[in-house]
Image 1 (cartoon, one colour):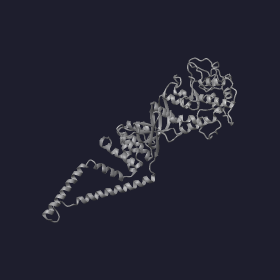
Image 2 (cartoon, rainbow, N blue to C red):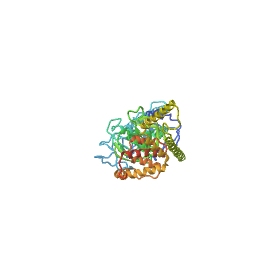
Image 3 (cartoon, one colour):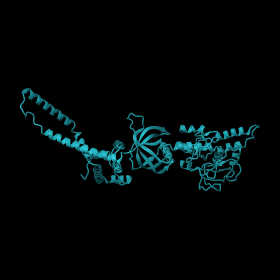
Image 4 (spheres, helix red, strand yellow):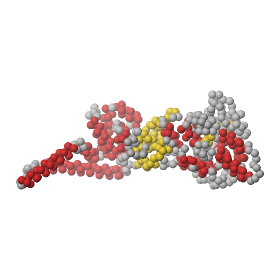
Length: 511
């Protein structure tokens, strides 16, 4: 449990006369309690009167006797429960429209309602100011209505089949880590069934009439914490995903199942994927800084412990700092955008001009070197001068031959890069497309699987580069370099460099 949740405990217990917070609150999910109107007067009614008013059976409309709270949110007496066998059950509440309920083999008494009923059976207060007694009783009731997990006032209270009440949010988080009830250690139903538990109607009415201001203040704090966009959940993996491309992820670790369920509750429904950092790298960060934002499109729950998540890459981001939260990492991040089209066009023109001038200068230098007269020709010098000049020329030729021999392996790479820099971005992309076509002829099964997974080649140059990078069999480290580049041209050049290296190692029928 996040330590910030515990800080809400004392803040939720504000004085009764304190003004209500702003009404522009984020609506709470799964309430469906439009019939329950909060008590809007300036003074709270006597707590005993409120408890006696709402602790009624939903069937016989009398005071609850042995209360049992069903998964539909209604509370009934034990005597009003019809017999059921093998969990076959018809709800005794006439207004309930649920086709099924979450039950155990034997119905359990609601522990929280039993404690509240005890307050109504107390003896009348001793002689003295009644306001003091009401304040003390209200304080005792508030302690009874605290969640055993977050130690705060109940928020969306739900009652488990074993009879214990807690916040709906806290119950689902607990189920991610354990199959047992945190209070009595009874085995809880599956996560999907716990999601169907309705809010307890009796407890919600009591909270709205006795602790209206505190309840909404607590709800506002939780909603603000849930909508905190500065903490991005991270899925640290050993593969690279690019923007604009679909990505299907198999989630089976409990920590990432917790992360997924929390992401589905967020309005953005997204998380980031980052490449795991190798153990030999000297850094405390769990992943490399560049990642891809994934937007959740669909989730297929295989069971309570596994899920297939269909996502699509949105954009690149950079991790500023990381923190550990309930087993998975969250990060403070910043979005990384490409340069504007105008800036990319300007850089392309300048690079083509510079590369052309460099090649022209190299050709002129080669011609001038070829026209240098051989040693010993030219005007006559003295013996000393001739020997000195011959020594300088001979030594220079030796140095030149050694330098050419040592850089012979690097020379073709420099020439290829110069040729790439002289080409336009469209020409480089066209060359990549030609290689993919030849690759399709050489290995059609690979391309069929790739097309089925990522779709056909997109028309956008930037999206095509991401698509082509997943087509070519490259290592994850090489793919990660593409995430660090901010222009389409640089990505195309980098991809073409890898293609040229593959052409030297592979054999294709088309060539």
